[in-house]
Amino acid sequence: MKVLLIGHTGTLGKILFEGFSRMSEVELVTASRHSGDFQVAIDEVSSVKALFAAVGQVDAIVSAAGSTVFKPFTDLAPADIQQSIASKLQGQVNLALIGHPYVTDGGSITLTSGIIKEAFIPEGTSSALVNGAIESFVASAAVEIGRGIRINAVSPNALVGSWDAYAPSFRGFIPVGDAPVFAAYEKSVFGIMTGQTFKVW
Ligand SMILES: NC(=O)c1ccc[n+]([C@@H]2O[C@H](COP(=O)([O-])OP(=O)(O)OC[C@H]3O[C@@H](n4cnc5c(N)ncnc54)[C@H](OP(=O)(O)O)[C@@H]3O)[C@@H](O)[C@H]2O)c1
Picture 1 (cartoon, rainbow, N blue to C red):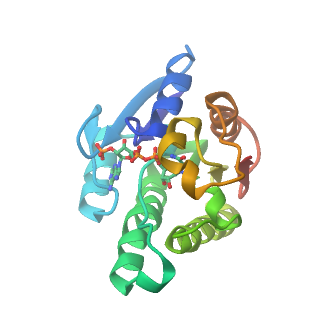
Picture 2 (spheres, rainbow, N blue to C red):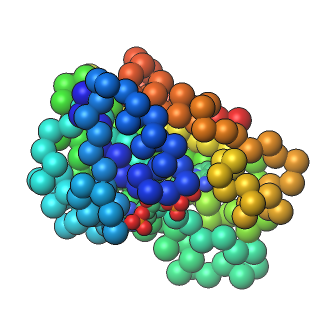
């Protein structure tokens, strides 16, 4: 099974890289802006087109890429929202829209949202907006995508690997370790469910 992982060097992406690398049946192909088997900027359509033209057919697309702007609501400018949308939302949507013709029949696309969609934290509004849109996108896309292709989102809690930086904003949350996080992506890639958001918390 050929799995294209975008964002393999990040805190989340490293978990997925290690998990998929342990699977003998997986041929793992990696991409990010600055490293990997291929370079891509997911927020640029031409770059995403070039990525898939170079990679060719895959059985699974897994995205751990993209970012959002964290600011107090009263400081949030339209440009901050636009930046969050362009990176985490439009970027991942680009992977699905441009990438699905390259996914084999019965293959899968997995995007990443996050707990901030529904468990709110200080400065998290742009992230909540984007995460909600990603989850609605996969739910609707799953109905129409066809060829037996499945599309899901994974919504992680704060990760153990990010906890030193995130703890002050996530008071009362219990960060999630690598195993349950990887399991959610494994479920999306190897399971039968589609249009779902797999929550890891
Ligand atoms: N960390 C957490 O606790 C947590 C919890 C829930 C959800 N999430 C979500 O998980 C995703 C990844 O978070 P993270 O903490 O792992 O971020 P991170 O450590 O900053 O890593 C981001 C990864 O994506 C790549 N990337 C970033 N922008 C890109 C772009 N425009 N095009 C292509 N690749 C890009 C980066 O590599 P390059 O710099 O080489 O491009 C890197 O590999 C985000 O959507 C985040 O909201 C994270």
